[in-house]
Length: 175
View 1: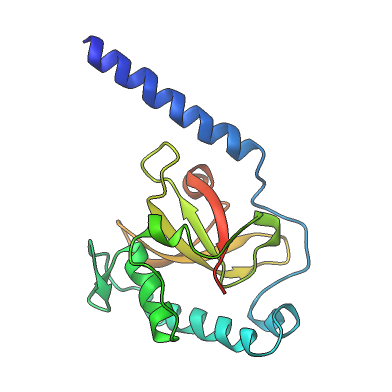
View 2: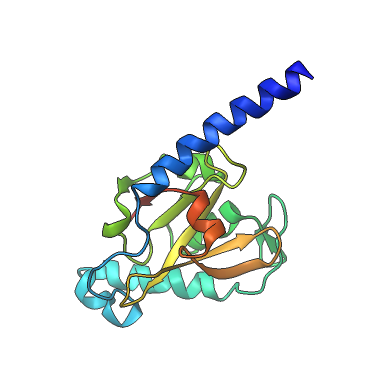
């Protein structure tokens, strides 16, 4: 009983830290629209084509099932999808989401663009356990991202969804 009580107290303490961080992070941002039509103005030169190709390649896997440790069209886990799409575009990323989270540059959510990566703690706490790639930012600031969910496979979700908003940790730019 004592161990159970200690576990509850410790886990509640770590989840409160994440919630406090969320209150300071607005996922709906006021900025000019950044979607596939606007990529030419938001990314210079070849970066625009790279981002378009990354998003196109990720979208071709929509509907693929979730598979733990999967990185093929037969099934993907979250990092398997992201690393595969980057590999297909001649860019190497680590295979695990926690390792991908160390790549590139950490950016504020208000500075994100399509192609940037979002990291989540889906098990509570602050440990990275999920990754997705921004596919679109609507004119109202709503951020959509493509990822492989355990329940639905490869899908596009909104950062405005309560589950993803609560699990959100940070964003990184690896391009």
